[in-house]
Length: 213
Ligand SMILES: Nc1nc2c(ncn2[C@@H]2O[C@H](COP(=O)(O)OP(=O)(O)OP(=O)(O)O)[C@@H](O)[C@H]2O)c(=O)[nH]1
Image 1 (spheres, helix red, strand yellow):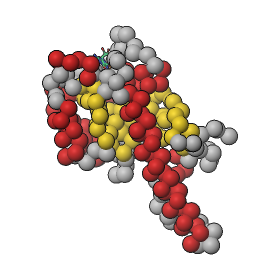
Image 2 (tube, helix red, strand yellow; image 1 turned 90 degrees about the vertical axis):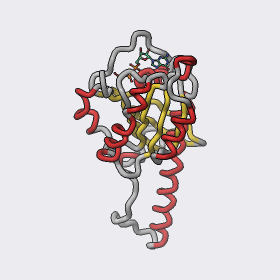
Image 3 (cartoon, protein in one colour; image 1 turned 30 degrees about the vertical axis):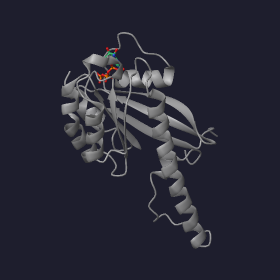
Image 4 (cartoon, helix red, strand yellow; image 1 turned 60 degrees about the vertical axis):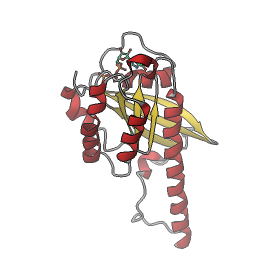
């Protein structure tokens, strides 16, 4: 029996070079990899975090931003509980491509997916091209659940980002569990598979199992 309550799949997307791999490695391994090369296809890493008294396992999928991998990465959207869309605050084209990425999310992801917008590389200071308030208003206007700015280089908000994802998904899952329990109680303890719940089988532990280069 695995020692965690929930398993969540988190998928990072965004233009090539915005820092997706560096964010994942900073969070999972505590390092900023020197000379990080472009991701080929997809890669994943796992980290378990505590949310209150619960252990929650995050399976973090790091996708390639390059256009040529698009058909591979699209297939990872469907099973994601959260999608983290990353741009580089010092790279206007990476921000300008956000609507295109949103289109992909709408087309391929679950309608209830948690959507997080991240402006990375805030350590770049004077090189910044996208002010924080512009990122925030894009997030608000496009129904993102959460927006924040990060730096994989100096670790700004990296833990906060993934803990926020874990916390929001756990709260959501617990709410579903409560509804499920209430539903069973209402039926005198009998459950019925017609109840619509969020991907329970794959989520709950111990059940069965650059864009432009
Ligand atoms: N200054 C600064 N540089 C960063 C940061 N994060 C990543 N980088 C640099 O940006 C470049 C690209 O980083 P990656 O993590 O490979 O970017 P990616 O989004 O995974 O790129 P693809 O795998 O091609 O999609 C590397 O040279 C990193 O060193 C950051 O927070 N600050």
